[in-house]
Image (cartoon, rainbow, N blue to C red; front, side, top):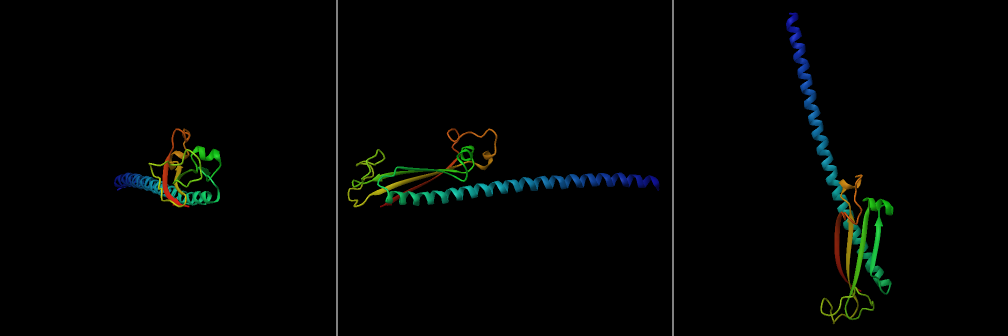
Length: 165
């Protein structure tokens, strides 16, 4: 009887080790899946935020063009200081405005000349607004070897708007 008891104790120990390994493997799989879901949600959030910033700065460019005689470019660093944005946190917004039409009062090289998009029937000024919102991939934000914006531009969302003033 004592001999059978020892065999059962060893079998119970092997079973316990197997169950612990199975639970640890399942836990690792769940953590991996959870990390991928968080990364996907973060990427989706940053993209939606870039879309909203692009819409907002496009409207701001229209407002600036109507209140000032000649606006060419608007830039902004959002969600952090300039150093944080350079490290990859936050957003970099670049708005470029081009004036279209023969009635434009903005003498600049961004004015589109006759033969390209010029509409000679335009009564008022028309502007072409290109809004670029750049942000980093969430994976490269905390990296020690993160490259500067000039080398790694990250992800860029572009919005083009044609607006009559």
